Image (cartoon, rainbow, N blue to C red; front, side):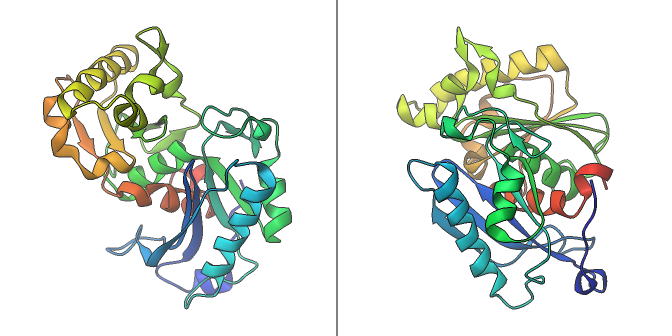
Length: 274
């Protein structure tokens, strides 16, 4: 992957890159401080969010992406309008193309995400799986920073996303939510959406999470689980109820992880692991 860096970014201790997170219900973006130091991995200003168009088909989603980008481009300390940006997307992404649609409109399958977004935004765009973006961010700036061995970042939201990090390097498209659990796809039973749909208490939900994490633990033997997604804001409601060999901790970047990871991917960190 080619790393694009503007002159303004090279001169800054905290190069700023736009990251945008495309979700099933909302699309949100922000100006991300990269680099190193105490402020790295944080946002400059607030996130900007627009509800995801319904149905979430390519043309309206791309138009919404352009609207978010325009708002962020107008902010103080934004990178140049021609600077690359990163987008994380809820699908398998290979060479910029969408290959799955578990939680998005099926018209996306086979779509050249990168080409579609670059056509609308008129700038270089890097597209990465949303869980991979969260994993990349947590490995660089969050709960996985400096951790050696195998780290699994599991995002619990509309579905279940997963990122596999080994010694700080991302192994892309770790679709752990597609594993079988109770005879169906795991995310249909153990996602945060499933908890709300089935009106589960936290104790009841923890039972499903126990089966899911035990299954993943048995297959992959990770050294650390990091739990992200919106549910990471309430770790005390369910993490103490789990009994695993593997340490399990909440994500530190919480719902900003996708934005930060998308910005990192655009800045070239997806390729070099730095």
